Structures are given as C-alpha cells and as structure tokens.
Length: 315
Ligand SMILES: [Zn+2]
Image 1 (tube, rainbow, N blue to C red):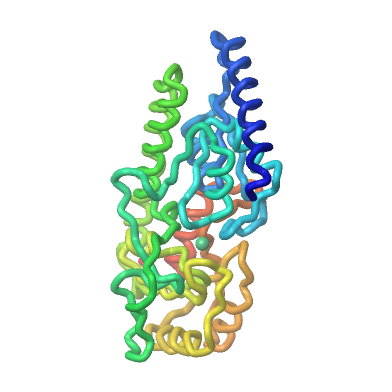
Image 2: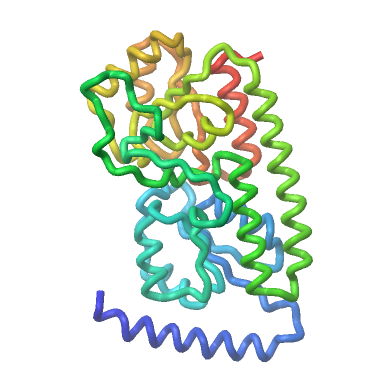
C-alpha cells in the first residue's frame, strides 16, 4: 500500500494543476461541471435529483452488482483524485473509505453522519435495538452494535440526506446554489408524497411482520410501524443457520405470514426454500442497492409498497 502513495500524490498534484487550469480558463462559462462520485445507486439518485445538469455523477457500483463490500478498480481510485465530491455511507463499503483516504477527493460526505439523521443500530446479524428474538438461549447483548446503513429506504430520512447533499453542492459551487435549492425543494416534495403513500397504504393491515432476505428494511419498518425478521444479517453475504431458519419459520407460521421476501441482486435461494417449506409465497421486496434499466428509486418504492400491501393484507 505504501508503495502507491508517491504515485497517488503525483496524480493528486496533476489533478490539482489540471483542474486549476480548467477552472480559470472557463470561469465565466457554465461548463465548470461539478464532478461527483457516488458510492452506490441511492446516492447517485439523490445527487442527480439535486445537481441536474450542473453536475456529472459517476456511480462506483456497476449495474447488477450487489454494493455491500464493493471492491474498487484502480481507475476508480484515480477518479477520486479529481472528484469535487464523494458521497458514501460509512461502514457499508470499506474499500471506498480506504480509497478516499488515499486519494483525497476535494470533499467527501458520509451520509450516515449528516445532522438530524435518526440512525438505527443493529447487530451484524440484523437485529435492531429492542428486536431480539424471544428464545432465551439466543442472546445478542454481547454482540457489537453497528449503524444500520440502509437509511435510503425511509423517504423521510432520505429528505435529511438530500438537504445535506444540496448544502454541500452549494458550498462547492456557490454560483449555482439557487438551482440546487430549487431542485431540492422539488425532490423533497416528491419524497414527502411518497412517504404519504406509504403512511396511507400501510395504515390498516392485518399483519406487520415482514420476513426479508437480508436486514435492509430496518428503517422502512421503523418509519411505518412494521417489524422485520431477516434471513441474512445486515449484509446479504451472511447465511442463516438452520436454527435461525427454524426460528423464523415458526414465527412466520404463528403470525400467519403469507410471503417471504427475496431481492433482485442477492440470491433468492434461501428465501424461496423457506417459502416452499412453509407452503407460502415468495415475492420481491427490493432494497434498492442497485437499479434496473428503466426504473428509479420512486418506481421501485411504489412496487415495494404494493408488495407490502399484498403480503400484509392491507385495506
Ligand atoms: Zn444491504
């Protein structure tokens, strides 16, 4: 690692020289596009909603790739050198944080650290505070609690994040701050409309337990009064033990659960096997860690709401 430092520093210097030239050459033109790097889709989505044509956004997570523990390519690390802003979520993709320290983008914003964001903590196996399983021999109190990174799945928390991104962009590019503020206002209104749809759509349901593939829906559950049991933990990599599967199976049966949720980017095998064993349905609940062609955060959230309403038998 140490070996790379002189090279990276040289690139940093070159980047400074080049960006210095271009900004002084074009100071009166609007082509001084702010270069933003987003570590994953939800952050790309927020940046584009607020920055519009005034910024360029590169998403470090390629399409179809599950972003937890993303590895970076050398050229991505170099990209950070002349980025004006890196948007990331701490504790989610350690390689991004390491690269940011090495090649020092001009600004970086950890979206779990923004003011006014109500964070949830969880154990690595996905239990949020106060949501321990009732079986006495499965105690999690000695496990380390970490910040649950999946904040974007609560539209109201995403409002807090969007505001932080807007003020950062205004700080970097003050000439366009009025445009960032205007775009922010439109985006916030859309998020608030989405939130109202969730509030109304989940107001009167027969059940409130969602059985999910990995523990991505803690914030969504917190926002709309649901409770989550996840087959895997905070990361989809972790496989549930047979004991844990058995526990969830029993709980699902007792609750009258009709659906086990799986995801688009992680393997659906465990969820589908459990659904088969319980003779109930398996359906998609998308944690929006990536996006498919033609979809957006809003369209997937609407599909998620429909999937939840069906599974929980909401009026
Ligand atoms: Zn996740």
